[in-house]
Length: 328
Image 1 (tube, rainbow, N blue to C red):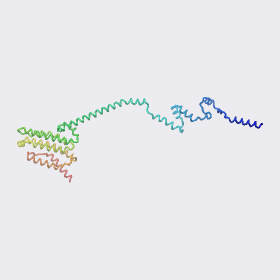
Image 2 (spheres, rainbow, N blue to C red):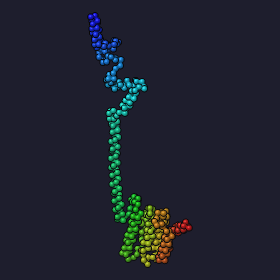
Image 3 (tube, helix red, strand yellow):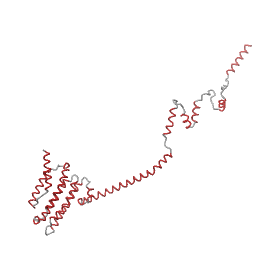
Image 4 (tube, helix red, strand yellow):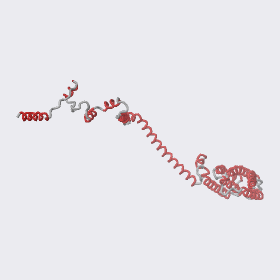
């Protein structure tokens, strides 16, 4: 009996030991005990190391400024260095504050308005210049249409000579004006019983020399001026009769007229020689020398003209000989 009593006692004591007993917290300091009583430590079994969930909550609870301040105090080499240096950089690259942008816009506003005003004035000036250029083109076309190119003032002539076709246009108008003047002189002579003095014809025809000199100065105009000077002398020879050829005053007027033509022709020849490289076909000087000599011999036998472009022939003969020597 005693054996069974002992066995039941042992079993009951073992069953009581198998029951789960409450685990008493380990002793802490007074401050930690007070914290545990307030519920700050949820896991009393591991009080020395807070869980990752507690760390995340405590991190989120901190303000951004405190986080940056605390992160800057961490020693280098820790895993949070990249975050510590990246956050301030991103803040520095942020947009400028609105007050600063507003102040900048207000400061440059007067300059922007002035730039817009100047741009509008430039556009208006451009339109005005284009309008004036159109008016000038219309005026030049009106002058050319009426054959007044040789009579325009020097300033207008200088503006019209900038056209690439200025030489050919001016040559046409001078030739046309020469024909008109010659016809008017013939009609005037026919309306009179006595012939007009040669000085009247010579003075009228010499008014074309300034226009011819202007033509010679244009690119490609020297060869055209050369032909106009020869034609101008022929127009004078077409006037007069048998009574007029033997008049001493007429002979003297013709000599003076051809002297002026010769002076103009020398300048034209020099300019033509300087432009000879641009002529197509090239200028054959010897051929024109023979042509002038033939015309001079005819006038000497017909009207007793003793000199016909003497200085011009000297320049042309010299140039013809120089060209022949270079070819050899």
